[in-house]
Length: 253
Image (cartoon, rainbow, N blue to C red; front, side, top):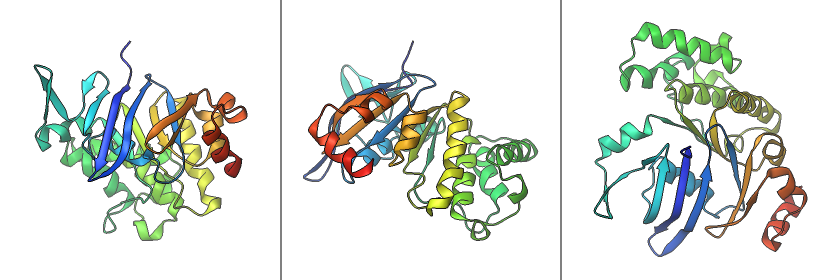
């Protein structure tokens, strides 16, 4: 069976700064992988490489068997045209730390924007689906509210619904709760737990160790642009093998 995400020796530099130094990992269909590690360890950059928001400098990234962002010809890689990369990106939902909602559009309008504009779905069908998604994230009463009228947690749940409206096969979450007040974190994590239960493949950059322990199938600890340690979350959190992992977790747990 094809892995949903397969990274082979992925490297990324910004100028002289080497941010990713050969990341190799796999995520199976329906699995949740949590990426943890200190700030600057390369977690968010790796996430952005998965949907080609960042170009990799070396290595290969596959989603559902397709090479992302590049075409391979006679063993050489050629970058795709932006419009072809955008087509690949349609199938990959991404939820950012900051909600990035259109401030001048209601929750409902934010959700129907991409399906109608990018996929050409009829507006009436997109609205029906958007209402279902708002119900799924517990915001059926907020369809006509503007982002400024919503709490951070509510805005993030709208952002999740917006990503789901494109029917992605993979969801990427980049620290989705780190910009929220502590009391709002739980409502966003609850939506993510439901998604995991429904079998959505997810890669989550997070500091929420309770979520990682409860929901993830695989926990990956990154530091300095490399995977230091990975494994089953409960085992890894209870008994980390590597000194760097121990030092990091001791500050969090």
